[in-house]
Each structure stands twice: as structure tokens, then as C-alpha cells.
Length: 396
Image 1 (cartoon, one colour):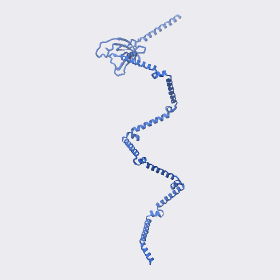
Image 2: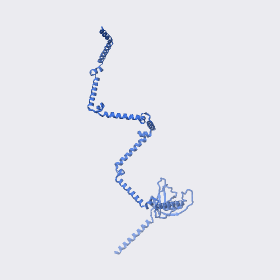
Image 3: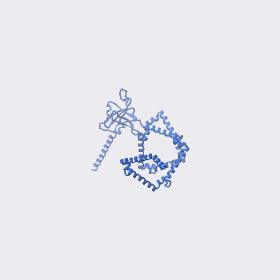
Image 4: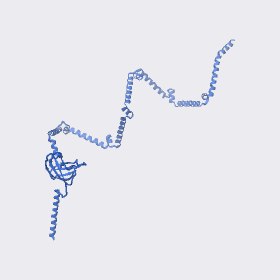
């Protein structure tokens, strides 16, 4: 019983190992009983591509290379470049792949350490790639080949040599005391000054970051920043209005006629100033004639004296009127009485008012005046006769 159990366990282990071996063989060798797609390509060179290299479609593993062969063909018309690409590559794909007319296939490096792969971009065009034609792929230049091409040609060698010479000269200047970096590396005093400058800049940056000073407030104070932004916006608005010709400044900038008027006004002012400077006109005489200037100063002094006396209650009637409260009130009452009497006259009250505004009384008063005037005239005409009789009576 024990022997049978041991034999059964040994058989299970044996067959399990055999099944694992078969699975690994099928997996690693890509053996499959499913139908897979195949694709034949042409390349100008293999660039180290070998059987078993992976095939990727847009970065996803899609199969592997099963054959890489040198297969030149004779040129023939309309062969699509097959004769110029003697490397024939056959791919085995996990499933059929439909290529479009703008598809692109390249041999690329699989890593920087080496190895190749084929990268397929099936394309996005609505037109499929013709099935009767062989697809011609491209070979991507590796980084090492690109570096070799860069330094391989004579011109590139000269350029590379020039770069190396420039680097050597730069290093020599750094090592010498003539350059700034060399002086900085060799002179302790200059090094200390640079360190002090860096520390000062760091201190200023810290003050700005903590909000000290105008710049710090501008950086950290939102209200101040908004105020500055509003001020800038206001200036921009003013400039825009000026540019559009709005307002006095805008018209002055954009209105040519107004600019000419201003220029004419300035010319007139300049002409007046020139006349004053040369002694023309009243202002010129005042500016150039010493006697007139002295008389003007005397007049101004007299006016100042009159003004002082007018402010002094004891210096005259005007001063008393302006400075003496009682006199000012008396004059005010007098003016009020005159205004009241004038108002009564205007209303026709009193004799004067009736004479002025009552037509009948005015006419009677006028007739009385005329009668008195005629009487006076008659008396004046009769005065010589009365004088004669008086003299004659006195004689006799």
C-alpha cells in the first residue's frame, strides 16, 4: 500500500514536470496552433536585425521576425523601390494586420545596450495599402551611428576640433588670473566680495519675502498690488483715451488744427515776452523804464497805505465806517431808512409819492408851478417901472 502511494506520487511529479516543460517550450518558442498573420518587407539594410527580434505595433508586442535574408532582385519598372532594398524580412504576427496607405515601418534600436526591433505604425488613412505590393521600410539611424556621422566627415571633424579648442581656451582662461572666474578662484578678496554680494541679495530677497519695504509690500500685500494694478489700468485707460483723441490731451495729440493753434498761441506768448523784454507796451515800460517802475511802486505803496487806513477805525471816515461798529450800524440804519422812504415813494405814499405817481395831482402841481413861474416873470418885468415911480415919488 505504501509502495503504490509512493509510485503514484512519483508519477504525478514526473508528468507535472513534463507538462511544465512542454508549456515552457511552446511559450518561449512561440509555437501556436492558431492561424497567425505574416508580412514580408524590404529594407535597404538589416542594421543588425536577426531572427526572433520582436515586432511592435504602436508600442505593443505584435509578433516576431522569422527571417532576415539578402535577396537582391533585378530592377523592373514600377517595382515600388524593391530593387533598391535588397534585404527581405518576413514577420510572423499574432493576428492579421491591416496596413493603410500612410503606414510606416522602421528598424529601430530596442535599447541603448543593443538589440533591434521593428516598429510598425499602421497609419490612419482611409485608403488601404495595396495588397499586390511589397512594403518598403526604413532604418532608423542609431545614436552611435549619428554620433559617428557627426564626427566622421572632414567638415564635422574640423568643427569638432574647433569646439575642443574653444573649450581648451575657456579652461585656460579660467585657470589664468586674467579672466573673471580665474580671478574669483585665485583672489580671496574678490571671492569675499562676491560672497558678501550674494549674502546681501539673499537678505534683500528674505525682506521682500517677509513683506518688508515697498517691494516686499508690493509682493505680499494683495491690496497694494491691486491698487497698483488699478493705477496701471487707469494710466492705460488715459493713454487709450489720448490715443483715441478724447479730451484736451487727446485732441492736442491727434488734432492737427488744435496743435497748430497751440503752437500759434505759444508764438504769440513768445512775441509778447520779447516785446516786454524790449520795452514795448505798458508792461514793457514797466519792466524797462525805471521812472515808470518807481511811480508804479509809489502807487502800489499809496494803495497799500490807503488799505491800511481803511482798516484803521481812527484813520478817517472810511476806516471808521469799516472798523467802527456803531458808525457802521448808524450808516446801515440810514441806508435802511432811505430804502424804506424810497419804497414808500414808489408805492405812492406821501406828498412826494403822490406827486410822482398820482397823475392828477402831478398835473395840478405842474399848473401851480407854471402859475408861480408866470407870476415871478411878471414881477420881474414890472420891477423897473415900480423902481421909477418909487424914485420919482421920492424926488417930489
